Image 1 (tube, rainbow, N blue to C red):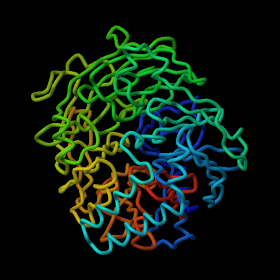
Image 2 (image 1 turned 60 degrees about the vertical axis):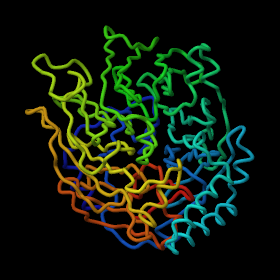
Image 3 (image 1 turned 135 degrees about the vertical axis):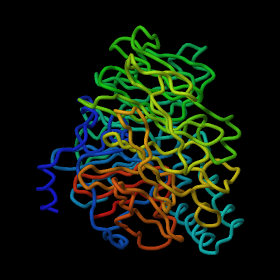
Image 4 (image 1 turned 45 degrees about the vertical axis):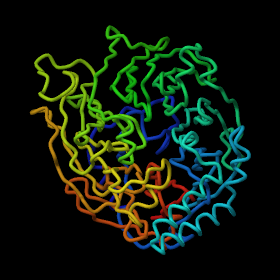
Length: 525
């Protein structure tokens, strides 16, 4: 590893989004790693695959449904706040640790948190594992229904997913539909986390806007230290004391994804029908073109048709991802659309459209720089694209035989009793031809977990969740060729090792931190 690090010190990597000085300085300060939501890093991840040993190099902390813990440094220590579906757990990650320091339920979620006790989840997991091993579709469906007994519903599924640490070590997440929670550990590694404040964002909005703000989906932080909350019906700016400062409303359109932003106040929002750029100037949020804002349509299918294919989002399922930073010639934002004849990768010009650029045939507007069919997926892509340089990787998330039941069923029946969504496809943006060009397709990866991968420029590997037979694993895919180069195989075939609904995190020592439905995991390298 020392030889690798020495070699890396002499290597030049693609440009990344500039660091946001209002976020904590860590490997994972905010969901999707950085303000551009690129899900890529310059530092190294693991390089040598192996079969993992439970409790040794496959460490775990039981917890019901955590997507992606945010990470901060406290002196020489490393701390994570894992905001889950029903509450927040503080973890100590110093060295090779995965130690729970504290846990408490969100206000109003005490009963659900108690129902999802470790004993209850162990019993539920045992039922799932028995049904999985039996290969019985009906029994597995019935076992998964047990999540309803611990308080799961579609309404609470977004709790805690998008979260971040600010530069002072305060943590922010969303819960309970329209509430934002601020918490802290006073920057003491061994001290339990505590609640600082909670605020109901909808309650602070005018009644006409509040009625359409049914649940906050996304939470980000601007480069001048304000929170951005996105919900069906509005994008809202809050200060760090959780006071509403400004908003832009758009009734009748859903928002089901995170909102990346740039260092100039641009905030990128994909609704169920449009791609938007709104602009924050430090005092007000604007959707006016004279302030640099814009909008563009994209292809989409009716919501019910998308749901029948197993989609969980309306319109585009991807968090918009920024591409092109620093001295890169083209600045773009990319999504996967929801076209009825198959999803496309769509790239939009982020700033001024080049004067000599002509609208391309088949696109919804001149704002679209290019779009290209994604061959592996019929419906929209749910995991956010990975962007490194001008390379973009997308993950197939169309379940071939979907279950007409929202929530966990598709993720845990696919690849077991039903076929799995398979494949990762990579494209490259060519600045000279202004085209999205196909690069490679790896057709073997089982994406049942709809887990967002991460790519390391240092190792040249894309780290992705996979499942072979019943056994979960992580794979390292060559970013340049698409070849699967390494595998980290979990210790047994239990569903405990799933990565469902998460975002893969690389820690500073190259270990992987992974969420999922039953436990938070650390792959020790």
